[in-house]
Image (tube, rainbow, N blue to C red; front, side):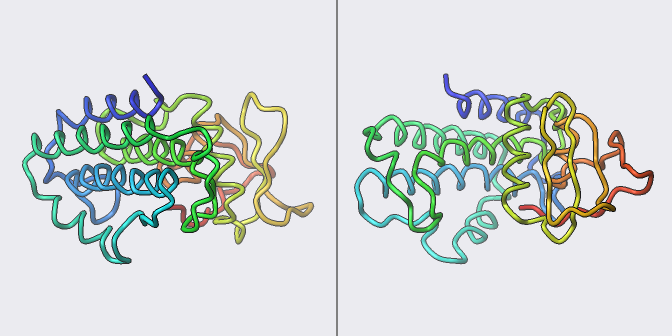
Length: 224
């Protein structure tokens, strides 16, 4: 069982207890919005794997508006239909990954600028982060150490927070991570890796983080 398989099963277990019409933790979204997005996102990554395998241009979404239109169209469906949709979309994604010959993983996708080898991580990130957004019992504290650290490094290197310089010192790591141009007055943020990652990802309030010199936490830039 892959990491994506496991993450999907965990999400489905949480979703079985929820109401699609209930508010999610994402502003303006319901649980139904999140569940539908998780399903359509799987299909979008299946498209990219198909592109890498066949060489035939197969964009993630059919048009710039197709992502949002798909979420809106499916968000009011009954819970059972939503869960079946996620399962079936995940199976299509898993089948597409299994069909990839070794050389296809090196194919650079024009839409992302990355090789197809980055797709499984991208799908895992979507499932684990949006699992939190459902507002159930699953929180960033349930992320694995490896997932939290990889996501943290991705957020830092992605440049989305460059307008808010800071130095991050996650507990248990040997090297600090720097966002933006650090100076002698740049605040140093310390704490558990999961908590720092959740805070930067907009999925935590940073209540258990420290700031040196003493002061308030800086306001991080918006992440996806």
